[in-house]
Length: 500
Image (cartoon, rainbow, N blue to C red; front, side, top):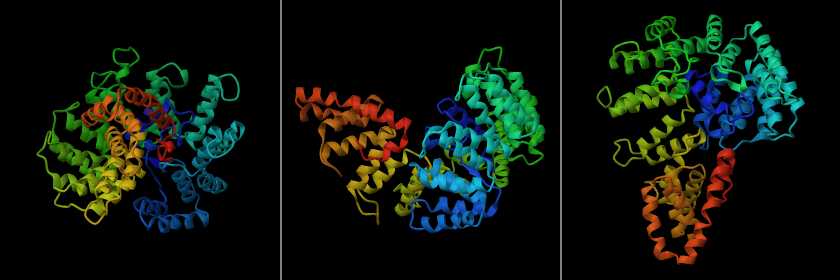
């Protein structure tokens, strides 16, 4: 079992500070990273299931994975549990729990960790911290680094008494003494970013990445090379730029970092090959060479790094350093989705391609399926596109104002500005639901405040539609709408309850 590495690492950093439990349950369900399984039967079955999301073939595809789980395949049971726990916009905790328990009975460490997170949070079960600790311990005994990290976190955060940093660090040390590679990456994260109130110590973070790399952790090795190449205090360090000017930062060393990436690339470390391509694309440690970047990304993609296909698609679409080639970009988008069937962005962009009337490949049915898969995997913007598909109909797809209204509502609650405008317009005209000028005004006001010119234009009519007193009443409706959006950010399942 493995993560899709560096982009996954970045997404974990973005989520780490807003979640109570590390590993596989997030407050924002729309940002859960994709994983792959080493068991090829399970991986193929899960791929078929992902590809069938939103279609009549889904039940049969899911049944194929369940057959593996029922036959005692712990990995299949875990993947189904994870799917129902964190990979769908709305969780099905009873199913998640049942499949996790099946996997745990077969000794699956990651499943024990995730089930522990459910008990810690009270997600579909009664909240039970001792039970969570018991499951994290079972995960740790199976040498799963997620379990060790969550055990340490319980101590760091004082979940069962006063915070005990020493105990938490001892837990991580136990895992590192057992040479569990993932724990070295976890420890590096803690010291590099000062998690759990532990002071930043960048030399220690680098030391842990080196030890993880020595244990053949491709993620640790690539992280170390990337950190060496760019540093975490350079002017263009992006996410890591909060260390800029700090004595704690890791200084950039482009030549050494590039040498490290080249060494990893010579050993077919696909993540390093992708990062090497990115270095040539931007000219980090070398003269900018877009052709070399393209070759590295093609090599990495052929080795199975899905990020590389995304980068190739963007390169041929952006018209930045190479000539724009839409056909080539389309081919790479298709390869990105083939590589990772949960790649929400690529699914969305493919859907947009087939939806566009100007596209030589215009196909509304194909576009609708791709949008369905995109929203199932976290592309909020695609709810607006699904609304468009049904608002006026699209070729063989008949208009359905109610369905369009529902899609706009989901997108609006998930804070998609265009969906908020469209939902407000639907309420103003009574398209798909009863006309409600007060709520229409509120939703359009929220969209206008976020810069939507269309919403600003739509609001002009309210000077004629509402009296001065009615306008005051409508203004009072804005705060509840903002609160609804804020609540949905905490619990995205609220987006699907039909309330507005």
